[in-house]
Image (cartoon, rainbow, N blue to C red; front, side):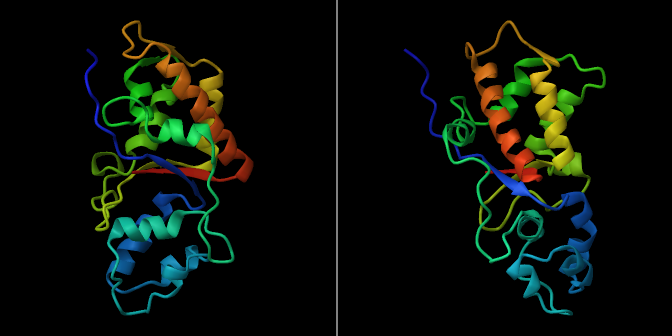
Length: 206
């Protein structure tokens, strides 16, 4: 009898316009009521535009980051999804405990790239906003329950796509799911190509 795996949280990949690294210091200043730097960087978020100088925001740092970095449309609506089809669903809830396809690829492959960029980029996407990687606390968990995992810039999106297609990796012989890495990689390429066409980066969240 196969082991039951309870349904996992859904992992989303959102279009990213501003590199979170550029937002960390402005957000920290904003928490004290100084929103000038943040507003200079973020033009299309109505929530950020509504912040009043001298008044600390009601949002936590992770929520401010989410509101600041995405590719918000000019009309104030929600960002257009990178993908609306099978790849979004397949990567969103991969059939392993925890449902994280990126972590599965990391755990089931060997990095053959010269500078080990393949695993570095996957790690940045799956946990780059964690305190141990970012060097700053408070940019992962929001008070609403959303979790920001990590990101890739638009340049890194291209780099990771090329690394996957260039076979800068090999699959471990003891892979848990037969064909799982190749399936996850195929759908990840679709997401990366979608971001590349939009000329934007990716934010991964739960």
